[in-house]
Image (spheres, rainbow, N blue to C red):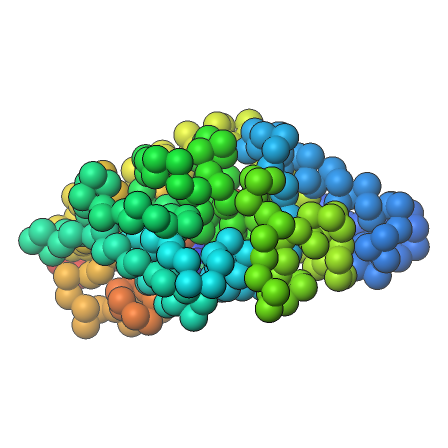
Length: 361
Ligand code: PMP
């Protein structure tokens, strides 16, 4: 069988080396005669794995000492609630920069908890979307924090510059961009990410939070979403998603071995360039994002002749190129090319797209 490449937006492809290692030790982990899945989270052997995963993530992202790294449940959407519950006093205000469907959903959820100032930061010029200049974002003077989503998974729009918020804590939903390129963590008050794209399996959510921002959760905050409780208990206030945490640790080891975030970011740029170039030069496919804001991870594209969509998808699948259907809200196609997608996978997709276009021109 020829190689299969999975372009799903999440849960997404994981590195084959990691999957093989997990398989090899699935039933008998560290010669303990049982699976890591079956072990107490408080056992010495598991604690060592948990601590190493955290240390490796700290190294990969160069996370400063004064930040907690929390391994939580509830996914990105869980954090849509956890962020305001922990950081927004009743009746206080927060700014939400909206650049696509996920930041919009985050703003809607936060509106259940406080006064949310929604800032529409996308402009559409001749059907090409780009991010408005941050100097035109009407940030509030009295916001408790500013929330944004650097990479919109559905829309394929990415903000590469870290916004200047003049001392107001910056909160980022990095679900689909974490570990894909280098970022300066110290510029953020809090970063969160669901694991199921660049980290590991679903069920685990990473929260990286500056220590001065925790400890003021509202009384009604569910304990499992309380950052202070999570931090005080080493993310083991309740049973953490142990297998996902272990697998994330294997992904972090893999990423360290292949050159860390700096190394993978060069590959990610190359992969994205290959795909955008194919789209732009084809006269057959199109993408609707300005070059300065094109996502490195999620690349939506449309066939000029949409009546060919189903044959494109069926033939792609026959060629081992899976999950290319665009999100239901925008249609068309989407190729998600996270860290684990090898360059060969993108080359195979580009080759398929060129051949398909040639045949149907
Ligand atoms: N934020 C972003 C940027 C996402 O891509 C997603 C999921 N695709 C979410 C939030 C929601 O994550 P979850 O399904 O883990 O709640």
